[in-house]
Length: 412
Ligand SMILES: *Cc1c(COP(=O)(O)O)cnc(C)c1O
Image (tube, rainbow, N blue to C red; front, side, top):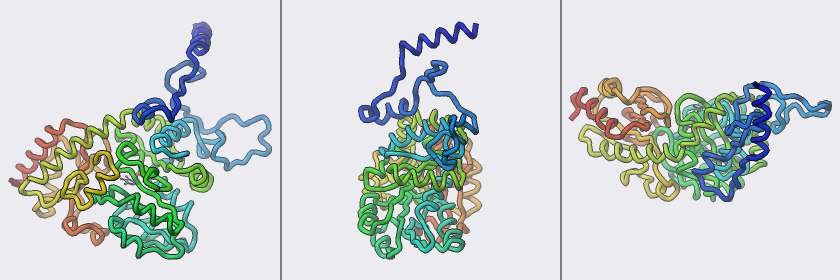
């Protein structure tokens, strides 16, 4: 029985061959479906399998093998089958030559810092950025390794210019920024980086590759937490860096193999599946978030709403220039005390109080006024704020959920 099946599939493969679309000839949403996938040569399955193996068979003469080579299938910390398929897909989506995928967004960010910053080099970074970036650049890298860091409001080009030093090697920005949704002008900042011979890396997690292409705007490296929109289903963590072959190869050799944040092949496979629907999801997230942001903006108990798609957003014009839609994260605050903010979050029935963004379900996080980064936030954030990741539910259901939570808190 098994034997017969085997014979049949060999014939099948012979007729069908392997479908490899020409990447330069297909559009973004087609790339999401096809790039990195092929018909499995062994079984004829039309999608590649999950290869949960730590090791790969060595060549007959392994005597000269470089054990730290990130490009040979030897050991899963050097590279793995599913990791390479996902890298192919993400490089195509960002329009970069190569990509490295790692175990988390933070592994991807630290791979950039550990590879391109040396003792005594200087980095300029958005002062509103992911908490681990703040921790690394504000504490660990300066204190342990002598790296100098200046944190600036990267929406303000003059602040970036003023921060430049002769040893500035890297400018790192996050746009839209977490949690303020602050927008930094990628094109303008890339000009500054080029002038001074520094690299520009952009954490584009909030936008995803569907809404923004930093490499086309002059960035050298794009970083993503795959945990968020790219996987999109809240069930796997991963991170990626995309850029030219030389830069990515350096990250793979130095930080992937030797720092060790390898992604599980299973997670790489899950993320590969998640990314198929990225364009559909991003349209839905963006459409819903705009409706909800408009609802919140007109609510009398809402103190402020920060959403790049609103005209009231301080960098709305830059957002329109560099993004095609405005994604799904809204930050806002209530005209209320800490206790009422907590009550509001706990009264929600569809929206869940939990960290992370870019999931299928709507998620909300309340950060109180004691946040250590408070002094970097725009004024209106300083009494505490809600970060709301709008999910894929019907926006009317989400708005109704918000309305009943306002009612439960006695907020009209
Ligand atoms: C979540 C997040 C990260 C970190 O990613 P993990 O996968 O959680 O390690 C980095 N940058 C931004 C903007 C994020 O939202």
